[in-house]
Image 1: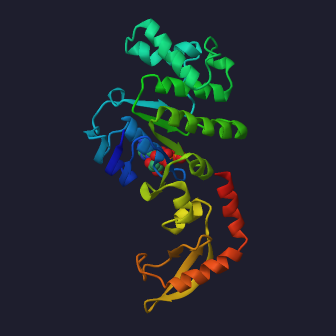
Image 2 (image 1 turned 30 degrees about the horizontal axis):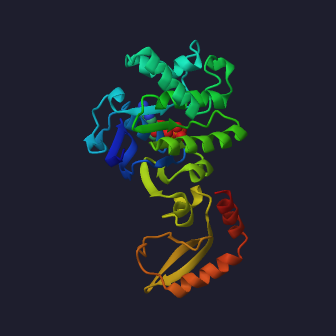
Length: 301
Ligand SMILES: Nc1ncnc2c1ncn2[C@@H]1O[C@H](COP(=O)(O)OP(=O)(O)OP(=O)(O)O)[C@@H](O)[C@H]1O
């Protein structure tokens, strides 16, 4: 399902947590909401989930305006940071729970829950209680439970933050595998840029509630739109120059991929910069040690 945010805004008294966000998320893609603490990631996710009603703007699931639709009528599955499993229920019963709420006949619910458990590779643990599972296994249960009703949108709120480093790597691969197997549009909140770069089809980077950039990982890394994006993605400007463009002097910074970030508004970003200047800068940059960092990133992809 395609998801469209149009001027989506959420205000809490004098705080604008999300400020006129405009993004179209294509069907079947995995999008990371990325940004520093307080940038509005969770608020955006909660508006998608229906836990918050936007102050203004519109939210569409496909062609359907959902601003006022109740969470349970949105066709979403959600995985929280702490998984929120029921400790007294077995793995099977946890996964079946949403179907029980919908009064799906028992045998059908067992079959569907078992099928989901197979998808997330925990079908050998169906009789265990959550307390008898590792963090990664608990997360698999939470994902199976979120998917059992065959939702059209999967929302994941910092799902890897409670796992140790090794499990975090394993589970992010698993989330990608499961997402692709089901083909479900997925929105993944994280403040970890490496996680976002490795897992996403598109990254939505926010700062102070505002849109910064919405691009595929390689593009946002190689071609940051502004200095904040460049810094946050670990491709910081490495050269500061005073340059003259079309008769105006301006201070610019150059990223290791040769993108030019203007520090003042004297020159508009869309102004064409002399290609020979850019080529010269790129040659210099190729000599820089920083290029090594980029290579390492590409190799990890
Ligand atoms: N219920 C609320 N009432 C008042 N202000 C809020 C509320 N929820 C969030 N905010 C404020 O809105 C802004 C965005 O918060 P949000 O939780 O969406 O950020 P975040 O990017 O998810 O942060 P984190 O990574 O720390 O979870 C912050 O300034 C926060 O203090």
